[in-house]
Length: 444
Ligand SMILES: *Cc1c(COP(=O)(O)O)cnc(C)c1O
Image (cartoon, rainbow, N blue to C red; front, side, top):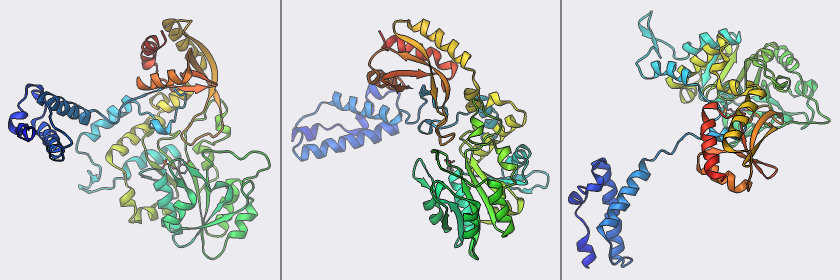
């Protein structure tokens, strides 16, 4: 068993020159594991010899693999602004810089400075949010899924929530309204048909165990043709007449009117609030363009009851979320939409995109690519089936090969009709140079 005797002593092994700039503790841990593996293999006669150099190299590689970042930036050239797989909304660095002052310091998160005693963490954003939305009160939780869960659990546990059959949606990532309902303890009372639900359907469903009339936005699909949905104000009126709570899960929620007539399919929050819903909820990182959060807004009396629910502790948001959200809301109050990247990208004029694409085309070479006008989607469970215009760079060559190669360079493009496209809609101008550089490398 010569090989066994040749296994290095750990103390000496870690002093090897190759490990000079590395953490001794981590080198020791990795080396111990690898030496132990070698020992086992030698004893099992799976291995007869090894070299110390190979072991050094293997430990060195394992060290760097372990420390290489898993979460890393990518360039989104798919044209989909709210790309769920790529992190949904972007946060503007200026928003983050301001928030960092609070995040990196002690703060008044739960401290009432005037009274010198414990304060409420939810008080911070609520001042700004109620001013922005014009509602009585708000509550912020971990995400909109939590918001739906908390609302149902608080008001409809063991009781019935009435929902249209056309709205029993599944959002990506296995969020299904019927399942969320049953988990929350609420009893789902489905009404209407898939394509049609009338006010009378809701009215007939109401019984002594009904707690709530709920509307869910069809975030990722549309129903076309012979269809009818009940206007929210009729649902609201019905709930009021029977002393029930009405709740509208908007999915996404946004502030200013959107371009390309997009606001006709999905209403801005202000329009939804014209019907005076008792409660609404929406995501912080869909069209609202801020951090992951669930924003619940509506009647103070109901928000107070939500705050009494013990579950809130499990769904509560951290100071990181609160401070970023507060900065985004302040940007909205001043209508500084340039600080909301989701809106900035959506509102970028097609002529600006075309000019950037032309510059890129010239830098890459006209034989390698051309500029096309095409259509894209918002994504992220918003504005379903609504296309709007965009500009893309069509790179010549086999689309699947180009897609793969660019992906290896951290640039995610899209294939449309067998053509590989770099779509400029969700591409920030500071990344144009990377696109040029990579295209020159790849497309020769
Ligand atoms: C997206 C969405 C949710 C879930 O929101 P998250 O913020 O992703 O948790 C719930 N309901 C609807 C209708 C949605 O579109």
